[in-house]
Length: 155
View 1 (cartoon, rainbow, N blue to C red):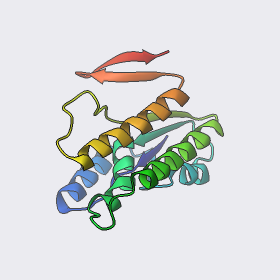
View 2 (tube, rainbow, N blue to C red):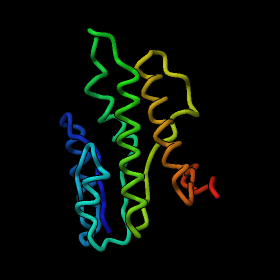
View 3 (cartoon, rainbow, N blue to C red):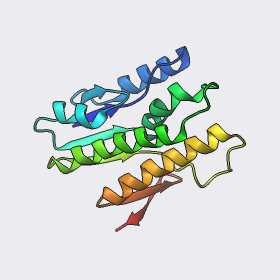
């Protein structure tokens, strides 16, 4: 089992969350902590691994989006962010297609809630939606967790 953790410890509270998550993982799991370019990093580390868990796509998108989110001058380049996101997810899909391992992607569905009140929130929601759509299209099976119950979406 290879557990791919995408979280960044940007503050003390997140550092605590990461440490707690690390303590709760089974000791026989290998862990790869990587914030971007996860497809190439998984390819380098996968070896004979049969199952890869990527936790999570939501934070991966944040890692791509985050450095640009406070940019005020020049205006935010939305097409550049979309290109970076597409390249990142395409690299991950390519990695998945090059191995016999099973991949489990953890992500959040944020498009079913309220429309964010600001441009950055809406852009983040849209970028995550695009990532989720790309991965769902490449996946053999897709489940939506509702109140802890898996609901089969695909096939």
